[in-house]
Every structure is written in C-alpha cells, then in structure tokens.
Image: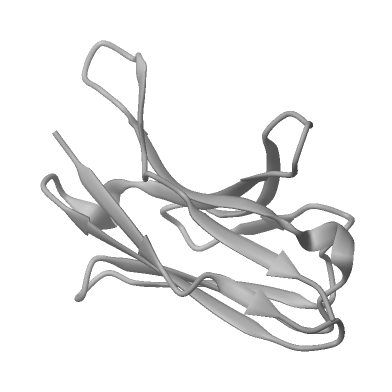
Length: 120
C-alpha cells in the first residue's frame, strides 16, 4: 500500500508560479512511474505531467514549456513546478504513482488532491 500526500496548492495570480509537492510512503518509490493530473471544475481529470521510473517525462500540451516535473527517489517525493499560470489552470491537482506487479497488472495510487485557483 502506498500513501500519497500533496501540498502546495492555493490561490495564485495569473502569470504567477506555484510548486506542488507529493510525498509517498510505503512501497519502493524508485520503481514507480509518477505523475500529476488535474480536474478542472466541471471537467474530467486530465494529465498534467508524468515521469517514468527511467526519468522519461511527458507533458500535456496545455502546460508544456511552463511546467517541470521532478522526483527525488531518496526523499520519495515528486514535485510539479508551474510558471505563467492561467485561469484555466484552476483545478484540483492529484499526485499519482503506478507500477506493474509481478502478474503484469498496473497498480496505481492517488493522493487526496490539492486545490489550485488562479485568479486575480
């Protein structure tokens, strides 16, 4: 069992920056693929950024160039830094980790989410 706790959300002005952090407990963190998703008001959850356990990253087009995902396997953390925030970045942001078990099934865990509101 893996427990994820996000932090760093809040109210940010348009054009501002924020850093989200997620700390994992349980499991073997360096084996996990890690990522951030978000759910805007009234919309479905969507990908923001992911980092595979080999370090390869993927970003949603909407945040590419102004976001950076990073991980620290020694601290069991995955962070998301976003710059030039826009009102459409307003959402609940979720941290997630996943891995394939010995039977080949994808196992994933999610944090409880942290609210990010971009508004003047």
